[in-house]
Amino acid sequence: MERVILSEVLDQLHLESPTFRRLTMIKFYYHPSPNPAKVALFLEETGLDYEVVPIDTRKGEQFDPAFLAINPNAKTPALTDGDAVLFDSTAILLYLAQKTGRFLVDKTDADRAQMLSWLMLVATGIGPYGGQAVHFKHFAPEPKEYALNRYTYEAERHWGLVEAQLGKGRYMVGGTYSIVDMSVWGWARAIPFIFGPDAWGQYPNVKRLVDEISARPAAERAAALASKYSFKQEMDEQARQNMFPQNKRLATVAKI
Ligand SMILES: N[C@@H](CCC(=O)N[C@@H](CS)C(=O)NCC(=O)O)C(=O)O
Image (cartoon, rainbow, N blue to C red; front, side):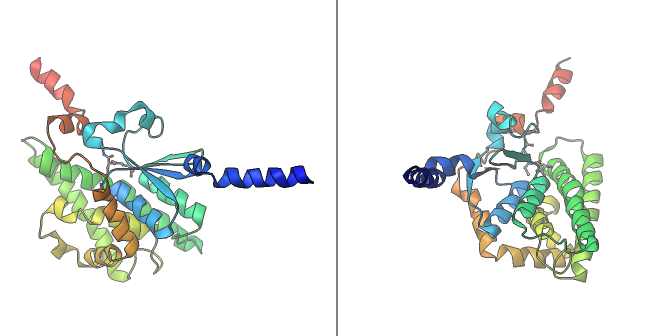
């Protein structure tokens, strides 16, 4: 009898020990950019216990072997939850939403279908095309008119779809705040950077959603992560090499 009680006490101590908590706590591999922001918002909204691991992509930390073992795609965000290892912001949002049962819109097949469809539109349209539009607008060398026009056009078209959807209701899907809105929020804050300072005029409903979400305490905490850790700001030669590794091939071609 005494032995049973002792082992229960030891189990309890073990489960609540700082070492055990550190080993099992969610680790969130973070950089202050749009895709990690979606996950930061979810973690803050749910109050899940998590530890931030800053990954400074301008310094090339995404290529550290220890990080590549978690995300072979060498991008942020990534997340570990015990022995569950995840990369890609949409996969992480779905995993955490299903784990907690929070911020899903899945009461009916029709709701779940819309939730997944819009989530994927953000994942495969809004994110990648916005990212390329930013690249060609701010970072690519001339000549770039063709590529800039193609990606800006597609980015505008995708945001037009989100704008129209938000014209029909307060939130993206099912009249309720969900991971789809969090996903939109992650990228929407970059709209002036993608399209220019007057761009909000084109997207009043997106602006309304962004303002509403940004005013939530969880969103304020998520946004505050950006200044809690120090990340390289300069887009100097080292940063360009880390962010645009494909340019090495151009240099080789130029030398030939
Ligand atoms: N599909 C991925 C894209 C991840 C991604 O492109 N992350 C950017 C930040 S928003 C990044 O880590 N860029 C650094 C790099 O490309 O080296 C996701 O949604 O997580």
